[in-house]
Image (cartoon, rainbow, N blue to C red):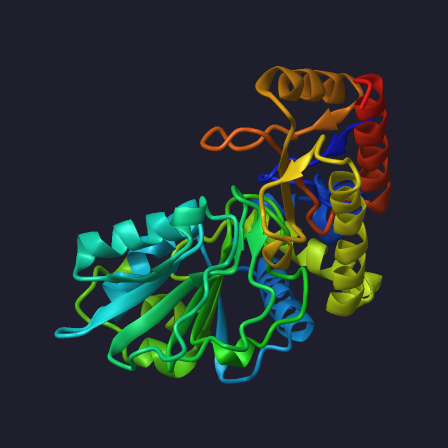
Length: 361
């Protein structure tokens, strides 16, 4: 089988052990003679998978009992619309902290629903850092929305200590399960699975139960969080295979040592590539300021466009996949999510050093 170092930004690498387990069970799940994809979402076999996935997520992230875990569809993009539809209040408006393209899109969708406000933005610096947060938010905001990690620009919130509001909402699509964070600080957390949790197709929502009680009651049924909470994410047919793979990824994470071990590994992996950038004497330049660097998405440029194209061409030939930067910003991006092994990052660092030496730098 061809060996590839998968640095794609999403859909992203899945643990080899998870893919092997899924392969073994694909045709015959737990001696039932059927794939899990063929089982009814109302049947006992899928129900067990569904609940195991929720319980594992609760255990790994230390989610308090007053929170509900939902498995929805439509990715973060649907959440951009569902959030204001459910939580915008008359004579109140939500506030958005802009740290990249996805938070911009979230605000744009909110403005289609009603009045929404930009609290602060890092756009003036081309989103190279997490902007300084105002010392005091107005409690008049219906909610305050943040994006914890920014895949395109390679920045990440190092801490949420200075972020205070009664109803915080976080899009954690690209760094959930990568490090410890205080769940109880947020009224709602959401994440598309296709970076750290599993394949595309399922979106995890972690919501304080009392929040859903206060949501808009006049929505179409399928767009109401209350609907999904009351029906345990089984109001309509869920993406059963994606949730099954999510469960396998969570089992893998637990066996590995949980969140602390994942965070340790992620720091080790990211440091290898950042060291190659920082020790290159300017041959490679990181996009993100050092205090805002992402452990998940490491963005950098070379000295000119021609050199960048050559770097990416040779990297592809050497088995590195997904290193091109997002089309909106160019350059290079190495996405070192949980399932990307240490060996891949070691190999990338080695390739970066050797490529620089070949150029006579």
